[in-house]
Amino acid sequence: MKLEQNYRSTSTIINAANVVIKNNRSALDKRMWTEAEEGEKIEIHECSSEREEADKIGNFVEKNPAAWAILYRTNGQSRVIEEALIRRGVPYEIIGGLKFYDRKEIKDIIGYLKVIMTPTDSVAWKRIVNTPPRKIGPTTIERVMRYVETVDIDYMSLDLPLSK
Image (cartoon, rainbow, N blue to C red; front, side, top):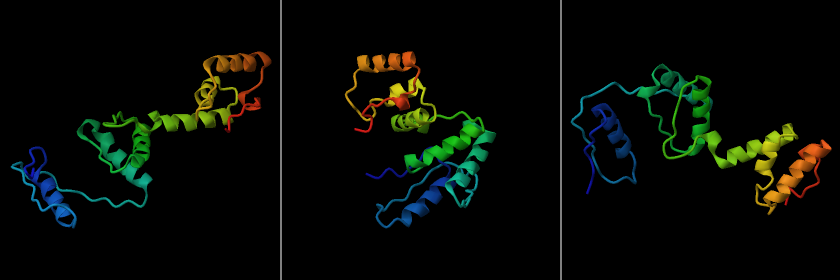
């Protein structure tokens, strides 16, 4: 069964989608249609980099954020788009995933960088001490943190097997 009728998009969007589908050799033969009106013309913007693309998107969205939804093919594209929106103070929500800077692996690498740049950062050190897992328990972590504070050294001075 083919689901070809679209109830939300304008006929301009549906006609453009049909052209894309028609040029896809591996796509099933189908012709989408809608009873909706024509709608605005489609604009094509050529960009020379992902940053330029994100800035153009940010400029469009900034004018009326509630009127936009941004679709991207891969999660890797989200970072530059999110940064463009953040620079403009545009609120946004990621549907079906996490914001780039909320992802565990990103928080972990930022934790490592923080400890390198600020070796006294106990919050960052506590985040990374068991990333990847090193079987260091909570009691040992608390003892090390107390020791660092008492002796007034930084976490980079510790001779812990953090590379294993």
